Length: 234
Image (tube, rainbow, N blue to C red; front, side, top):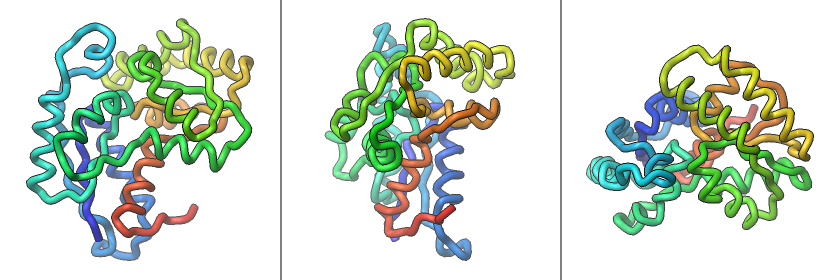
């Protein structure tokens, strides 16, 4: 089989979630049938949203440092368990011949296959939303989408940064997040894209109701297929 390199640390828990999903989704009957995975969880990578929206430190040098380590290990493909980081993917891809597998493209394909004709509600950081990363990928796949209002964006940033990334209790943030989902449903959202790698964890922690697409799981499936593995059927 081919091997996987995970350019992680954005954040560390999301990196662990991707690795876990690769293992759980691989149809393997013994340890030896699993895919070899190299992980560089580089938590020194500067915040991507801050870089995009506020002129914060460029994350690419630290991302490139992790990329070099994964190249040295011999990874056959690179995964980034951070949706916002895909804004910088063209710069990173130009640095290596190893293909990056896009979380955005894998998610857009899954939306088109599983929820054709329904409108996707995009849940993500302000950096991801305001760069149009998902909107563009979904348009290419023929998927209609909508974004949260300003209050909803604030609620999402709070649960992502002040909740999961800070390691705090999410319960006080749940009402504002649930209100955001309700408003988006009223606007026509038929399901939601968990477009920040912390959000699948939020969904699990808060047991959020509704239909969702998990980009981390879709990226894991794309990587398993790329490496020659088989997806475990539910």
